[in-house]
Length: 193
Image 1 (cartoon, rainbow, N blue to C red):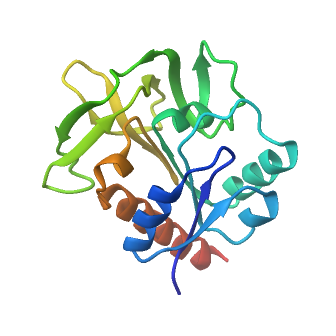
Image 2 (cartoon, one colour; image 1 turned 90 degrees about the vertical axis):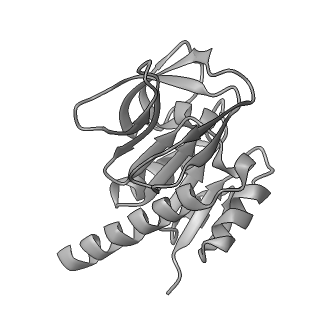
C-alpha cells in the first residue's frame, strides 16, 4: 500500500511538491479541507498562513497527536514552531523550536549541503527568504547546521522542519526521507495497536 501524503495548500500552487512526491511513489492529495486530513499519513506545510480555518486547525492537531508526520519547509516552519518571534501568524505548535520571523536567510541563496541522515552526496539547498531557526529544545535533533551555528534542518519525533526549499532544486531526497520516516512511524503505531 502506498503512503498517502497531503500538501497543505490554502493559498494554492503546491504542484511542485505533488510532482516530487509522485516521483517518490507516494499517493498525494492537495489539502484544503479538514476531512482531507483523515486518511493521510503525512502532511507538508510550505507556506505562511495568517489564520487557519478553525476546523482545519483542530483536525490537523488531532491527526498530529495520532501520529501523522509533518514536514515544514521554508516559511512553513513558522506554522509548526512552538515559539515564534515577531510573527502575527497562527501557529500549529508541534515542534520545540524557536523561529524568528524577521530574521531571514538571504533570498535565492544556494548552498550544497551534506546531510548524513539523508545522503552521503551533497544536496542542493535553495534558501528563499526563509525564517531562521534560532533555538531548539534538547528533545529536537539537529540534522544540519552551518559552521556559524545557523540551524537549517531539524527533527522531533515524526516532525521535520527545514529552512530551505527542496522543490526549487527538484531534489527528491528530502521527500524520500520524510516518506520513510512516516512509514517507519506507521509500523511502530501498528505494532502498538
